[in-house]
Image (cartoon, rainbow, N blue to C red; front, top):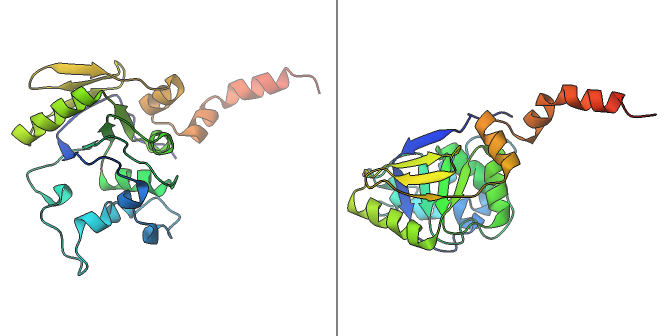
Length: 198
């Protein structure tokens, strides 16, 4: 399934300065019954966003109208715990296209890259600068430039570079998942297969 191409994103952000956010907090296990990737955003951080009666918890960041955007800024060790793909699906389905943290769990990070969400790992120092900027002004905008592998606080022009696997970067730039990539090089595969002895 192809996704939107990711080149450059300029957006406000939701701050979630909580460390060790695991996948069961991102999407509780009781919501894993569906097999399609749609609808999971409704239950992103379900137990943090809603009371038992279904009403919103007004003090949770995703329910606070002063915040907005397509970027989620999480605390250190974001996405730890089980390997459920649904956690990345919920992040994408809610509308996020980028998650920033000073450290990601590897499986969550790869699950995000496979579905069109860019995980940007920055230093703890720069992560704190982002949190401080958003606390000072909730309308703070960030620029995520995938080509240059750079995240910038637009108001101050402070930036930091981030790393990404070259294969995953190319897929993100083209809006490809793994299957799209293989289909895109199908002629090369056929040519190679035809050149091999039987």
